[in-house]
Image (cartoon, rainbow, N blue to C red; front, side, top):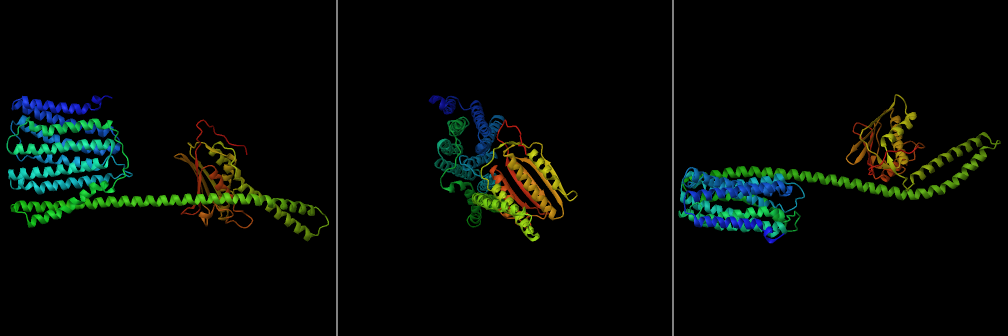
Length: 582
């Protein structure tokens, strides 16, 4: 891109300014020059409003507040210019002094101060829209009070045009000075495209501030007329700002988190606080040192009291939003702590099962050899016909206990299995139905009820069908055993899709679990001696972890226990549902 194309909007702004200068020099003062000046100025301000709004719609959401506030400033500025069009082109006379629309001109700077202080270039980790809006309202209210305190007594209480012009011009310059200071801070603490933008705006407002002093002096000495060279003081800065806003989208306005003093982020809140503190100071000055008329002093005191009441209410409202944000942050911290605690428990449980599995695997193999010898010898003795009844009873007991020990060893070996089986796309609906059908003969009719509820949109999961089926059987069987001890009940099994995961619930109406936090620990069981080894749910936990899922257990307030499984759905786009043969 050529330099001309890169800076085409600034070239256009310079051309508009030079054209205005040429018309001012060549045209004679009169209605034609007045119409040209008023309409051209109004058109420029409307153009600035339109460009700001266009940027607000086209730029990222983070920048939207900046461009909307700039549009509000230009719109108020255009409303003031519209009054000049009305008075000079329609009513055919100069605008009165003082003029009601001077208030509109004064307040057009406030949204621009808020736009610069908003710092659209800074990354915000959390939304603070309420706080930002309240800060802007507080600043707007403070400037409204300041205008009423300084200017209104000479404009509407006791009319004094000379004092009004002096007070208005000084307060307007203070307001412009504040905008220049905020832009300077923003340019200093930003970089790249945003620094370029802030520096251009700073330069334009400096030119406008100096030009305003000259133009106001011309108004006071009655040498100003619309279309004179004095208008260049505000036409050139407006054209400059419009060129900046048209060029800004090409300047790579990156929004990042800057590593500078955090006090700059608190600029608007600090300004709002200074505004609150200034109110009683101005009230004391009015009472002790103000030499204005009694009506003006009374109005100033009332304006201080009204501002203290209004801004005080906004302070309390702002504090309320901050308290709510703090409570939300504390709740989020508590949830994060709970998630971290759960994750730590899962990691500890996983490491515990892994180390215990290695130990159990070796021990089970060592026990299996002498156990086989015991069973072979006891069965040989049992086959001898010359045993006495007492000896036969002892041999029977040895054989039964040996068989039970072999089942325990088999459970230990099953629990200690570390190598995951082959995984295929599995239909959970089929697995759950088959698990329920397999345990149907163990269900006591009339006492234990099974209710299965599966959503229609359940996708397949990438799993080992046999091991997952065994886990479902173990959970259902445990629930049935618990309800049988409690005299019966209802087991509800449901499956539904939750985001990218499948949620499966096993909810029973049994007596609940004495210690839900230990339910997956190896060898932990609440069953009677001889009825359980305490390894079933530990094996279930291992199967779920093997499938990258999560399982939790808790007691229900109304009684009973609920096991919740979360399994990730299959990532194979073309996988077809299948189940292994049992």
